[in-house]
Image 1: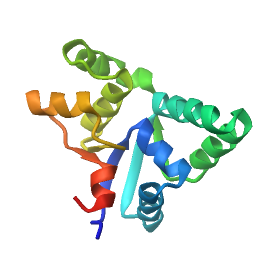
Image 2: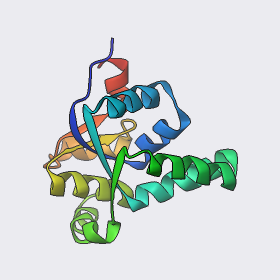
Image 3: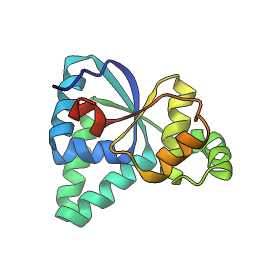
Image 4: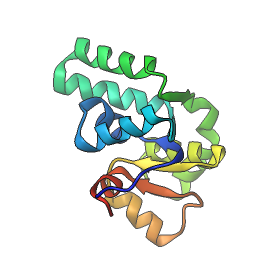
Length: 147
């Protein structure tokens, strides 16, 4: 049995992909967003990741439709990466993480919310174990699987 999410979350690109591909975890997250129990923020670089991944999988037109549909759903508040660039750059300077992950963590830190990633990426887990990130991090794969 999966547990419920509640509150405010900064979503990474992988989580947006889960939503648009309507995986089991993506559908469950969409239900939480529809119920009003989860409020989601993301950054525009995560949207770029979503768009190119969907384009590779389905082609440009379908990728654009899916991304636009997500944007029009009202489920997401999108922050400009430029507004997070100093904090994300500082993190990227000191940690071997993907720039987009640093943006998600910077957004979560700035807004006082939890960062929600799609899965336990090795470099992110390694960094969390090496030194705390200063922000709560959850993984949709754990949440949906009931971990």
